[in-house]
Image 1: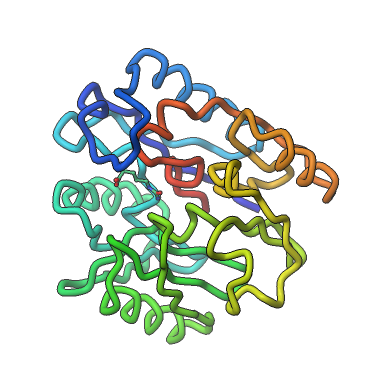
Image 2: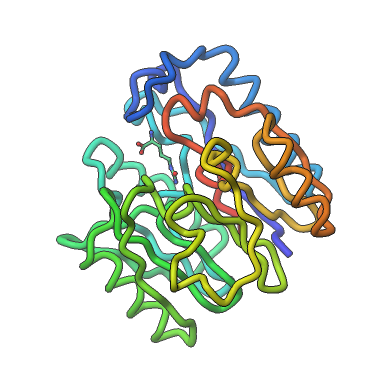
Length: 253
Ligand code: CIR
């Protein structure tokens, strides 16, 4: 069970942040509404929410997941792969000090974004992407393996981050899209397969008794319901415009 989440309010500079999408400029007022709904959904899931103030100097800093990797025993402060985002780790480490005593760090030349890390019980998958390099992935693997976790490094072919295309629910069940559908590393899982046109909905999050998924993906929603989960659907349009998904917006622990 997750007890806590950390989220961060998007600043006005959000609309000028990093993106590869061609979905247009984000609408800041709508973005704030969507962010508030995200926080409400998390509260419905029974977690205590720590909300950090907006930081104009870091346009992408609402995507807090990229700055840390958390286990019940320790926090790993990442070394985010985008220069404009690297300074985000300072506030996240400071905030996590209220919750954690043990910290590990990803150090240069290693880079790593939390969005490239998927936890499946005591096994972590670490993507190598535009943001996470081999050295960063290897550092995290070593930290995890030294602490009784298993870790597998997965070089990505197409996805932006590992979790852009995969989520773990429970009981060996994963939600997968694109390059992960037939990927040998995920062969032994039961799968909810998301079609290419609905790929964005593969980034969903299980938070205690609910799966939070983006609104507008009926087939994914139905399949998750059929697997026995209650879902909460959220409008995510303004986050999608900046390459962000549901998992990126919180640190859950
Ligand atoms: C970025 O390019 O870093 C942000 N615009 C989006 C980050 C999304 N984070 C994630 O998928 N974990």
